[in-house]
Amino acid sequence: MGMNPEHWQGNFGEAYVALMAAASGLTVSRTHPDVDGADLVVGYKGQAGRTRHPKIEIQVKTWSRPESDDMRWKYRMLSRQYNELAGDDYGLPRILVVVIVPANPEDYVSAGEHAITVRNLAYWVSLEHQARVDAKRQHTVAVDIPLGNLLTTRTLLDLVSGPQSTRIGR
Image (cartoon, one colour):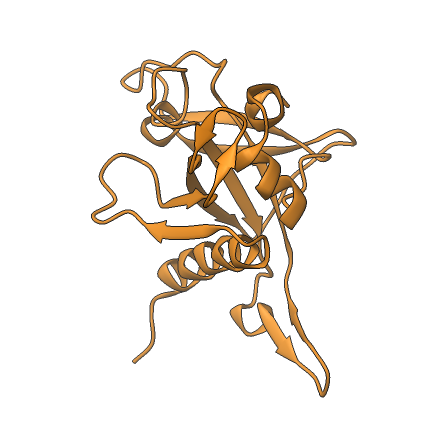
């Protein structure tokens, strides 16, 4: 018996981000148990500016029916999850990563003679400068994710080891 579709999709999203971290030469670990809204901790072994071994926390969400306009993805999330990312009072920077996945799990990965293809893409946003919402009055929050915030090996490395303005100011 396999995982239910929701767990399957979420597991794939976390594996996608872990794959990007591995391809970037970064460390990655799962938070266990996931009680504070961070799924993964991604870090850099070494010195980055004045910081030794910098890290970020990432909440990973997956989305099989994405909606966008010409400038941004329009992602809707539960207020309690949003509140775990909003604000600037965390010990480590927190990033929301949304992995756009195919509707059919069988299309997540395909293998050929010379390569594998992992579908589709991931995007990131920091909610550091956003205010928390009253979750009792507002069940969900719409989060705008700029289409330019494509998660690549380079941007993930910059998010972890770059200066504060590069890390979370986009």
